[in-house]
Image (cartoon, rainbow, N blue to C red; front, side, top):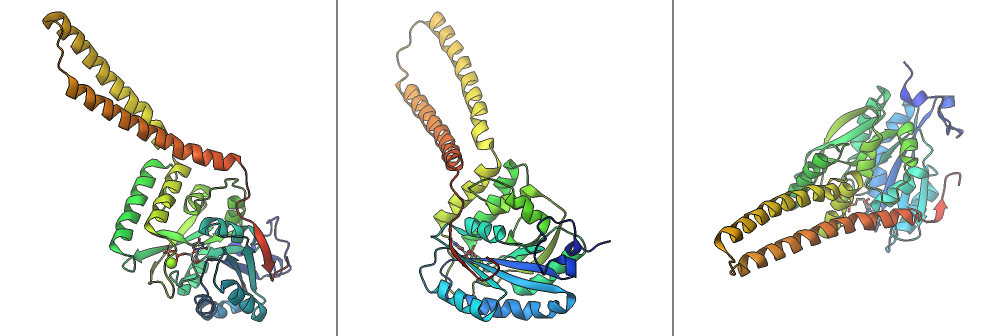
Length: 335
Ligand code: UDP
Ligand code: MG
């Protein structure tokens, strides 16, 4: 059987170092936002873990996407690029968010496989050879799964596990628990992702949606090397909403059933009141029950409208068809 990195039918295999001459290229795609201190330790650690693979006919390249950093991240990247021609740097025109930055990196990637990684070394580079091993066995997607989240706080662990449960309950394509963006994806998967037109990109969901043969490798997640997490509680909440609304319309549709149930009960209650009035005459008291039902229904309606708003906002963002990101300049590579 052909190893997957020796595909010859790949239409985009135009690069000189493509698989035609037996060398497979792997792009490490790294979105960075205010990470000036993390870049050189990251490069160091990745090199240590990948240099030996060069003998096995693997060439690595790095695609850093500078996602609107306000510190010296870009300078550090340009310095690194000057020393190592395997590095490419895309400088986005502002902060577009990690999902958009990763999309930019994957769009720019013409390697035979890509590995999206965080720069803070929370995605340990020693896993890279393990991912590649599985890829060579023929898997198109190799997930890196955290077996231990003890580097995350209690709340993050709880909310993350709740998110996976709720999301997978509602969405048709399940996303695997405790798997981040760290994974290896084959050229075919990159092309499939590129073909997805949506602007609001919940990458974990998109990865799951495209499918392909998937293997899993396990690792222990370390604490962040330097700096602090870019994702606050509020950002994570919105990220979770993004995931659920992108891949399930259940929150919209459920109102049909909520409405039907309330209407059915109201109808029965109406019949009861008519019968009671006919038998016992007009009964004036009822202030409390009227107030409670008005407030209850008002609350339910606002909730329903709010959920419609969540989807409408996303539909609006999609129909505007603005680009997902804007590249100010790129450094290195062929472009
Ligand atoms: N990141 C980015 N744009 C952002 C926020 C984060 O490119 O707006 C990058 C960040 O530099 C890092 C990766 O995304 O390489 C993961 O971020 P972080 O470590 O803060 O997330 P956490 O590990 O806390 O989930
Ligand atoms: Mg991190």
